[in-house]
Length: 141
View 1 (cartoon, one colour):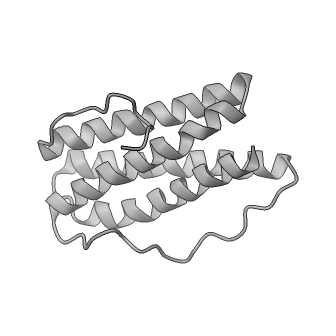
View 2 (cartoon, rainbow, N blue to C red; view 1 turned 90 degrees about the horizontal axis):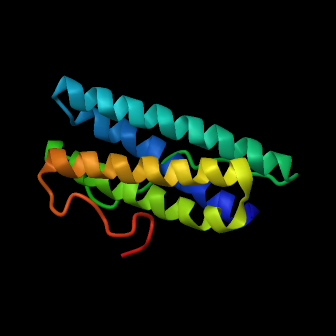
């Protein structure tokens, strides 16, 4: 289970970093608010994962000081594109956690995957990207 949790942790940490970049390229107040809320949610998920990994007497290791983004984020359109990619990746990272957890932990993993898929849908709507949803959120395309 630690490998699955570590994968989700890595995605959550990358999302936190990415939202720092995304937020500065959004000009509409509602979009900035949405980005801040997403970053906060990813921080809460990260903290939960760190706690769960520690419960298993495993170490998370230090988070990288920075991440290499998949493309330059120079404007709103690229910020929205990055937000979509990040949320799809977070959903994909939580999918394996479902099979490795039970009870309340599985409920948390399902909520994390679902929340990421919903956020990706919101960002797609703002970016006017279709289709708005994935047939199987969390599944690699």
